[in-house]
Length: 133
Image 1 (tube, rainbow, N blue to C red):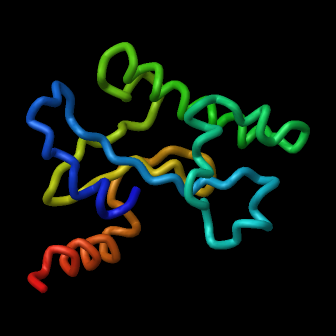
Image 2 (image 1 turned 90 degrees about the horizontal axis):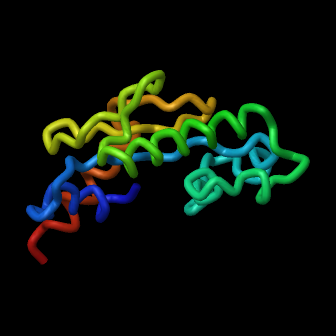
Image 3 (image 1 turned 60 degrees about the vertical axis):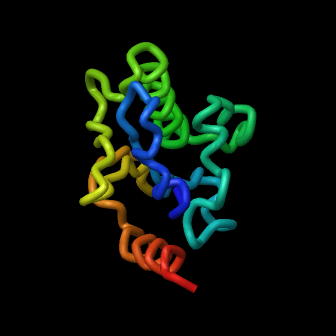
């Protein structure tokens, strides 16, 4: 999630649902040597489209598959109810402009809702982008 996506959360009055922000910190075990700085842009696509087996093939680990399954459960819940939360899943927090919580698909593969670890950086970017020229 970048600052522009975060800055649009809550701005659509036509939305029938609450905004839920996410951060992906998880990197497939076989790709960690290539991504020492963490998850690269768009590296979460195989998890959200349920194509991790095709993407990683024989390098797919049980942890990778479990991370993908958790993402898929949130997506299925959202498709059914417009709420990603469901039984047996850590709560995905609803966006609050005062605290800006996110669901972090964390580096260890466990989804965690809470404070955005990059909030200070994103707050600064947002302040600078909104400053008068």
